[in-house]
Image 1 (cartoon, one colour):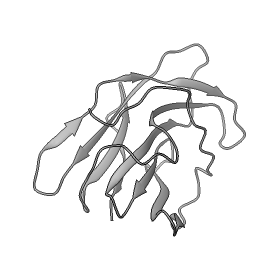
Image 2: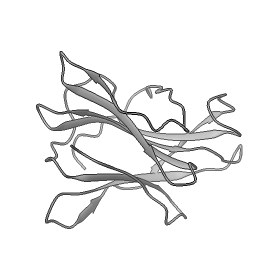
Image 3: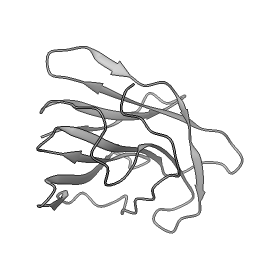
Length: 143
């Protein structure tokens, strides 16, 4: 998929249990937000520029995992009136016992925090992340 960049991963800290409103940066019209599955075990964290409609950062977050185990994640999107498109599977990095959630955490990142690039997606597009071997998806609808 276009818009993916490699490099050192950005760390985004959030409370998995929080379901509050997204935070806004008025100057850049950028929204930082996250949504989790009903059990809170899988989450999507993303940065979305409401003026350019670009998504420069997507993170797939798994709350629990086993040390030394390899996890893979992908992200998908469905534009209004269109079919679902998916990225390839990407290896997740182990973030260990992070203190933000019980157990351990595994994260996969696409893009960079604070960048202006990324795929351009219209309002109403549903963006999801999914870990390989699970049929659960954490999704967010772009507003």
